[in-house]
Structures are given as C-alpha cells and as structure tokens.
Amino acid sequence: MRIAITAALTLTSALTTAAYAEGELNLYSSRHYDTDERLYSDFEDATGITINRIEGNADELITRMQAEGANSPADILLTVDTSRLARAKAAGVLQSVDSDVLEARIPDFLQDDDNQWFGFSQRARIIFYDKTDVENPPMDYLSLADPAYKGMVCHRSSSNVYSQTLLSAVIENHGEEAAKAWAQGVVDNFARAPQGGDTDQLRGLVSGECDISISNTYYFARAIRTDVKGLDKGAMENIGWVFPAQNAEGAHMNLSGGGVAAHAPNRENAIAFLEYLASDQAQKYFSAGNDEYPAVPGVGLSASVAALGLFRPDAVDLSEVAGNVPTAQKIFNEVGWE
Image (cartoon, rainbow, N blue to C red; front, side, top):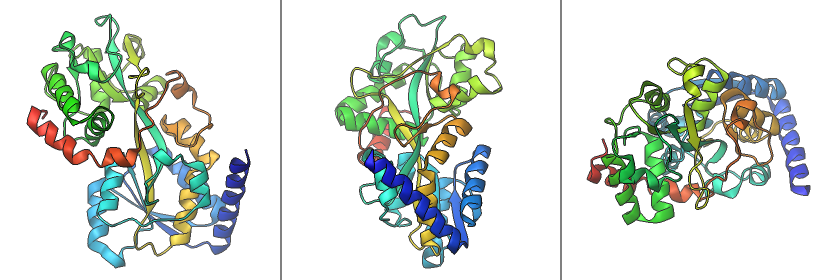
C-alpha cells in the first residue's frame, strides 16, 4: 500500500511541477484511436502543457526520428506492439528515463529492461470460434496446429506485427523447434490465405469463411459496445471465445506503450506525460475509451472488457519476446506463412 500511495503523491507532484513549467510536448504517435483525444486534453488541462501531435505509421515515424537526428522535435513516441517498441529502441530513437512513478506503477515485465519504453495498455490475443460449427475449440495456441482443425483457421499475414509477436512468444515459451512445428501446422489448417485485420478475422467467422480465428480482445469488445460493420449483434451471439493456455503460460498479451525520444527538447514534460499515462485516471480511460486492459494492476475495467471474463495473462518478459522477432520472421518464411 505504501508504494501505491507514494506513486500517487509523486504523480501529483510531477503534474504540479509541469503546470508551473507549462510549455509544449511534441508527440509522435501511431495510435489511431479518436478516443485518445480525452487522454491528451485531460493532460493539457492538468498541466498547462500544449501537446503538438504528429501521427503516422510506426515504422515511418521511427525512420523520421532517425533522419531528424539530434534536431528532432519529438519528445514522445507512442505506438502499439512490443516489436515496434523494441524496433524504436534498436534504432536509437529512445532514451532511458528514471521515474519512481513509472517503476512503482508499471510491472517489470511490461517495461524495457533499460527503461527506454513502458507499456500503458494491453490487449489479450485470444481464440474466437463459431459456436454452431466448433464443438471442441482449441484451448491453447499450440492446438491451433492440430490436424482436427484442418481448413478451419483464419489468421493475419506474417508481415503483421501481431502475428510476429505471437510467434515470438511461442518461441520464448516453447522453443524454436516447437514454434516452427506450430507455425507449419497452422499454415496447414488455414481456411484461406492470410489477409485483413483483426476485425476481418471476426467477420470471417460471421460469413462462414472460417470456423476459428485469432484477434485482439479490444476489437471484439468494441463490437459488443458499438456498431461495427459486418458484426451485427445477432451474428455476434454465435461467436465464442477462449483465453488460451490457462493451464500453461497464459493468454498472450499485446502492448501499447511509449518512451521519451532520444533528443527530446522538452524532456521533463515528456516524463510527466508518461507518468500521467500511468495514473488511475488515464488507465481507466484506456479501458473505457478503447476497450483495452490497463497496464497498472488493480485499475477497474470497462463493462465491455469485463464481459469477456477473468483470465490469466502470460507474464513472459516482453523485452525477451521482442528479441525473437527476427527468428519468428525466418520461421514464417520457411513454412510459407504469407
């Protein structure tokens, strides 16, 4: 309890200090959610700091920061997926920060070993299936390769970061040999060539093109809460879901996070912004606004997220997972996962 109280007091102090300092914050972000507007406006109201945003593809933003070098105006990079955060670190566009607030609030396995990036929200990548056609759905990731599911599985392409990070986690948890056998088995079970985004995998279940698919939870939770094209409420009732590997490593988690830019001209404001993202207020909004799981333990879930039920997440070190991405891509190429 002392840690939580200290973290809250330190966060308040950081925001108060920033309010006196005011100034600007230059944010490079590949998060593309309209609901994030509330995060930015609340921070501006609390601190007096003006956020200037540049939005784009994560790889393009990283390349831009590299090209700008020491003259880069970027203070913060926000992006999704551990592999992109690791890519930013490897590119030298982030710097280490020392923050008692972030250390107390963000679990160790959701932050970089060198404190160059921190996770602020999570998405479970789980198995969805057509309840009318699948009596015994796979209960873990490895079972997706079972020949019993031949011609039933839909998945995204191997070039997608979610695919890369999932295979990287399989490598970390089960070894490279088992991971390659798994990837080959999934390819053998494809109902169609890999295509589309996560919502398209769910639409494949509704259309009957697939019987089993994988998607991040927030796409499904969003469809519960709002109207999503191709996912009407009647069809959604036929979709079941499994939080995989509950008797083993637990459900794979994707991360959305950020770090302070290597040459941040407004470094103190940047740290204050990251600390704000770790506050209860911001953490609750990640769940309420975008149907994500908070990174900070103990923060309440929105109704649409809570409706998916309790589960045990995989607590594997995401820094280690990110290091397996090159091996994952090699395996994808070897097994013909397009």
